[in-house]
Length: 340
Image 1: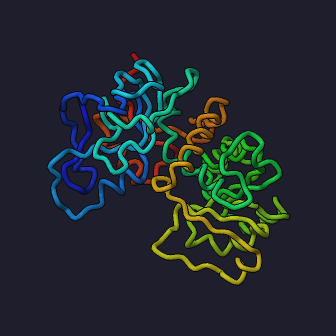
Image 2: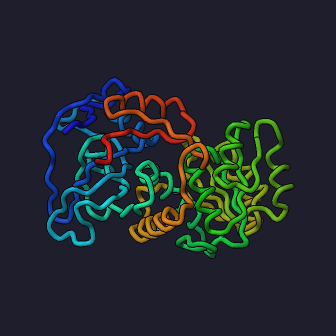
């Protein structure tokens, strides 16, 4: 089989296309023929980071993907060959990711993909959607698992609504019944946020964002989904409703300054989110909720759904990584194989 692999950390130049044997699934494992793989910023971080040593075994990037099961190991009874599926955290603490024709993963990382849902949607879930779910459910007094109507009557502020996590947060919050306001940096991204379903969009580069947020939602959002806390936290604290919560999935730096007196006065909760290390119960709640949203048509991709897709063939995975490094708008996908 064809795999994209690297044998030492570094730039995109360390990625190479190699031939390897097709692996067999062990007990509790599933082998998937990958159709589409997703590329996330954490894939770039994993490839770049390290102490410079050369690996004895190939490292295959890619946490997210979608495809068709072609073999199952002993003890796997809920999944079967021929099932269409999506994957999450495929390469977390493992060297085998989704940028290859076949991947073997523990069965718990494999989720049935509804027949009417395309593989490009399945490959776009994983890290972005599971992160977004946790940002919306990490506070006392709120739902621990999203369902339709579970955020009814609440307002959600999503910073950076044109990014992959921001896009998923908008769609999940709207599906759960929230009123959603988002911030973007230009009109092109504003159009994407509206296509994703945001009720209010604020261009923070050309307006005073705090003023516009207060105008749109005078009571203040109960939940803030934050992509750059180092810059935005003072504004978040100023506009959030009393007893609200701020979820930080990208701090924007090694440290942030909290306006503690204002936060204390409002009884604000703060939650730092890394999807990889959420608890098993939190992860499974997110998987269930995301799959329900997908089945209902609430988590779409493509320009018309607010998340433009940029696609590369497997042999051009280095170019796909470069696109993510250069902050491509929307979602970058790798076409690994056709559906036949």
